[in-house]
Length: 444
Image 1 (tube, rainbow, N blue to C red):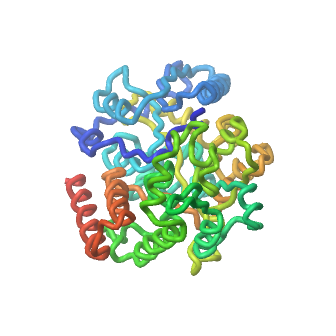
Image 2: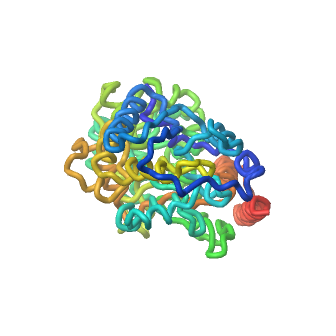
Image 3: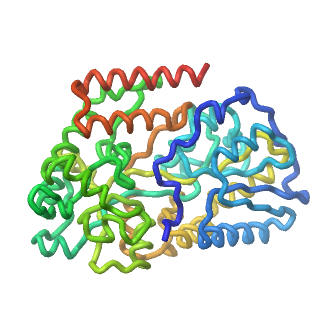
């Protein structure tokens, strides 16, 4: 069965023009409406699985009970592209409150003005965002001082591991540093001649959730400098990252052998996936995978731990990559005060956030909810809560180009791991130039 939400999949679905065309100075809706007057709001979201839709509908019913004057019409399984087309068109059919699974696009939403600045609403309601939301989640819901979105649950990534395979190999705990990672992966790897039958851990960037930005988060890199210029070539951690990934690959037979194994795997969401079939002893994934494993009942015992960190950053162990759903108010809404009441309830009400998080097995997005005793007590889920609360955990920085820079970094990383880049330093300098050119074009 699919995960609670597909939003954690690598997805940069919007070309710059799709969102920004004709919207450099979007029309402004009304922020003077009476939130106590009878009104119907349109809320568009991306959840589509029956359990998720049931959970969000339950949240809406709770809200309507608290605000009997506000009726909410929900539309699910809506893509960012569809939302943005509706917001450009405006009018009565456009949504008032919107959500997105793609945090990479927040920079576009804020910079274009398509989603309204929420700071005036937060101030008016007395909501101190820095006290309510973890700083990492706040970072990916704003751009250059404009808070156009708020977090609506989050995803954290960690290391799933096959306890039976560990026991058979005489390994008593998951690795914590990258050198331990390579040693453990090598011990867990099973070969038949030159053919890898089981990988300890497959670092290949095209595998399921293994996009390089998620792996790179363990190093805590800076993608941009204070002036917004790309700095991957100046970031020494970038080269260390590529060297470590190659070492991890070589310890298990090398990139070509691991690629052959990867191509034998079934679909990520099926029972024929690499981890489910025992062909991967360790695997990077999000918190939703634990619920899937419980329901699918693999024929081995499994556990969860944080992904290892660089040896010279051992004190950051427990960190991980974070992302999440974001929600905001459409610039064209003529019911922005009423829309704020709905957005505030969905994102800041502790009981609501905890209930929703438990229902769809995602990480809560407020400090109070993360500390709530009512959260699911499942040990695997709690591991992801600790990753989410770790101060070293990292999300991608927002950009006015959305996820274009992530796509560029990913494409370059594919070439590096395949041994197709002769001069990594020169390639990184060219990558920075490409990212900066895309940013300049988007701003102009």
